[in-house]
Length: 158
Image 1 (spheres, rainbow, N blue to C red):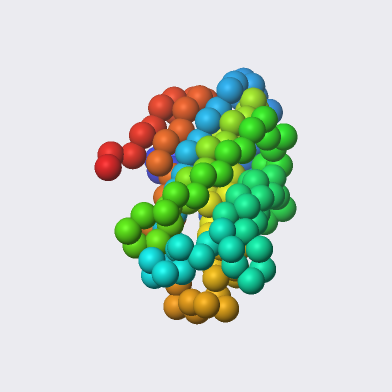
Image 2 (tube, rainbow, N blue to C red):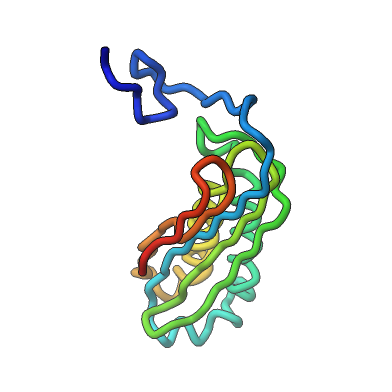
């Protein structure tokens, strides 16, 4: 007898499927993700006064919207009624770090929502800066932490 399939989104024949979460309990779940947008210090200094407007505000709103739309963007993700989405954009020596925190009370976690939030915020930020720095780089998208659900706590070791 073969071991059970470790990939929850594949059935016994290896076909993609949406996981049935109907038997799982509803719990509070929190996920945190981050990414980095590398750009010059000169560009970072202009982010609050770009030709298209305040890049920080636009990116934060895009990140919130991205989290809310995850179920539409990721084919096997469950649509979730999110309780809260926070997006923080912090300048650093190499550009900006984007961090998202998503809270949901549901049968499945918000890891994808936090990661889509970061990536959408980063893409919106790129759109804002491309007129002055086309070679900005989006990198290091990752899940930093999650809590709740069957698998419990996860925190990335720095």
